[in-house]
Length: 195
Length: 195
DNA sequence: TGTACATCAGTGAACGCGCGTTCACTGATGTAC
DNA sequence: TGTACATCAGTGAACGCGCGTTCACTGATGTAC
Image (tube, rainbow over all chains, first blue to last red; front, side, top):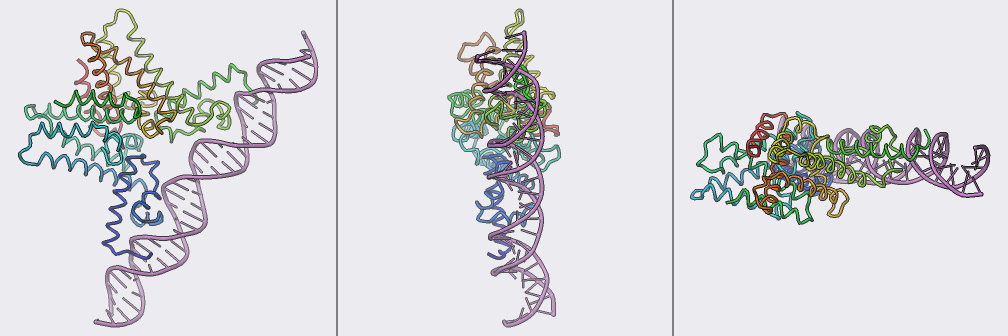
């Protein structure tokens, strides 16, 4: 096959990023191979460098993509008129702390799925930068979900505490998946954070 | 160099496991290479298979080793006579949620450092099994630290909630290390869990 | 509008490197007589 | 107690595989005249 039109190429590029964001979340950046990602988008691996400078660059873009999707979803719920903040919060938490989220990291929270990869990236690596920016956006959305009765500073603190607990729960549940403890952790944290 | 005595060989084997537990916590199992681990213990990589059947086997042993060290330390504090449970809990949490722990994963909590590797192991993989067993031991120790005023069931729940929050905080702090957010997260969670 | 040329998305093979694993060999340790 | 033999921890080279990256080439797309 020869050259695609600019339009088609852009679409394929987006497919590559979306596919990468799924594969990296599922397998981690190291084990998510370029060849597999490209073939998911219907391309051969050789075409990769027509679109990206390096795997690291793709990882950063894929991370940003996943974060912005997740955060946009939450903000959309918060922007919906006539819905109470507390019910948005409880809905988001119930979904986040579900067995379904535990079992489907590929389409789940990038904050949980990519934390180890970001931690092991170099201090000024592209992935680390994308992760930091992404998490800040996510923290902003969670902050908006905190009870309106709280003072601003307290809302911020509670948001960070909540994120740590959510993310720790899903991380642990995945790490012990297959053992009853996985469900027990999710249940205990649901009790702590919901209602 | 030729054959070592049984005694020396056992010592070297233990050094290999200890070194592996550090390197795997720092770099992850995939990036912690056998050659580097062996040379840390003063051996060449070829000797590896005189001691272990596979890298996976070493990863499981290293994980068990790290968990049992951490848990034993906590249990020793709890077993010390004349120390209040609440002060043990607060001391453990302060150390866990410190910048020093964030910056030294190699000698830190295996539950945090190896969660991603365990999650991506096969359901009946050796590492996953070791992680599950290790986390259960750790959960038991944390349960002992919970306020004695609580009913047994509640202590268990609180222990799991506490572990999720601790582990999530350190995981996030490492993932955004270099940004002020890393300190902010640790500080917020210290406030929530200590006193 | 047509035509010739330049561009560049995509292909498929190959390169290079790291790393887990294997293997023939060495020589000190351990053991049977 | 000696002595001969078997064992096996450790060495160092090599193998094999996966994977990121490079590259010559193809042919449709886009553009200048």
